[in-house]
Length: 252
Image 1 (cartoon, rainbow, N blue to C red):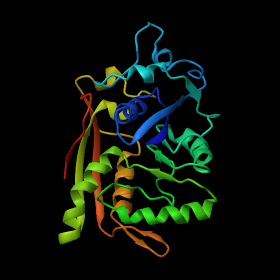
Image 2: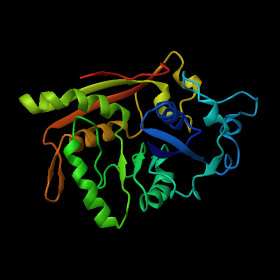
Image 3: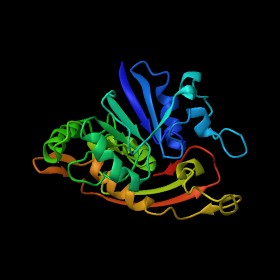
C-alpha cells in the first residue's frame, strides 16, 4: 500500500481526492495539506465555516479517521514519508509548490500549470500510456527524483477517451464539440455566483476552449525522439457553464 498526501485538501477537488482514496486498496492517506489558515487544525475543524456548518461538498462522507487528521501548511509540508502526492491547487500555487514536491516524490496534479511543458505528459489510462516514457526525460532534465504528471482538463478527459478508438481505426480530420459543464467544475475560488447561473447558461469559461484544443492534440499525439508530436487534426469547441451541480455533457 502506498502512502499518499492530498494537497489542497479542503477544496472541492481535494475532497474528491479524499473520497477516491480513503477506501482504495492501493493507497493510505497519511498527510493532508492546505493553506496556512487551515494548518494546525484537524481536517474537521478546517472544513468548518463561520456559521458552524461543515463545508463538505461530496455525497460520500469523509472517514472519521480522516476528519481527525491534522492539516499541514502546503508551503512547508515535508514529503519524505510519502510515496505519492496528489495536488488540487490553483495554477499559481502549483507553479510554486509542485516542483518542490517533485524534487523528491511523484506528483499527480489537477492544475494546468505544467500541462503544456514539452517534458510533461498529460496521461489518460488506456489512451496514451506510451507517453509515460517521457517522465524519465523530465526527471533528467529537471534533476528531480520524482516527477509531475497532470491530469487533463475535465472536459478533455471524456473527449479523448471517446476519440481514441476512432482516431486509431479511421483517423480524424476535424473535431467539433460543444460542452455543457456543471458548476462544480468551477470549484469554490472564485466559483460561479448564484445570481449569474440560476435560470441561465453562461456561454464562456475562461481559457476552457483553448485547454481542450491543446490538450486533446497533445494526448492523442505520438511520442517521438524530441518529445510529443501533436496530433495533426483540428479541434473546434464551445464550452458553456450550466445550472447543474455535477456532471458535464458533451456533444461531439
